[in-house]
Amino acid sequence: MALTLEEQRQRRRAREQVHRRLFRQPCEVCGNKKSQGHHRDYQRPLDVRWLCHRHHVKTHWGKFPTMSRKGMLANFI
Image (tube, rainbow, N blue to C red; front, side):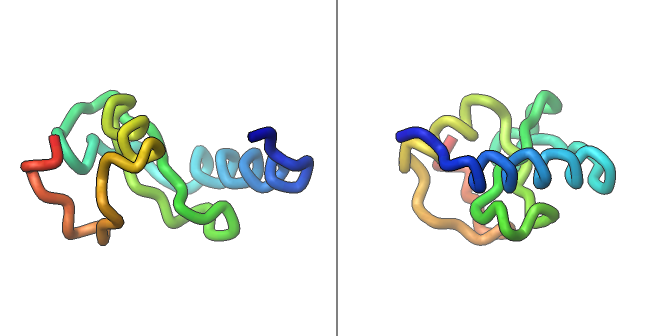
């Protein structure tokens, strides 16, 4: 599904704010240092979960249940 122009703008703004204000952290699941910022809500650009590519993709595919930032369990690896 294609993103609307407004959704694209929100993503771009979120990405810019993350790069300016946040320091990259290791993946919350496996500790991989090559992580990506995951936003559940682009209206809250500084609310970022750090996930490696593998776990980021799994999150978007719905392989992980909805989790709190502290509630990630090792058995979801």
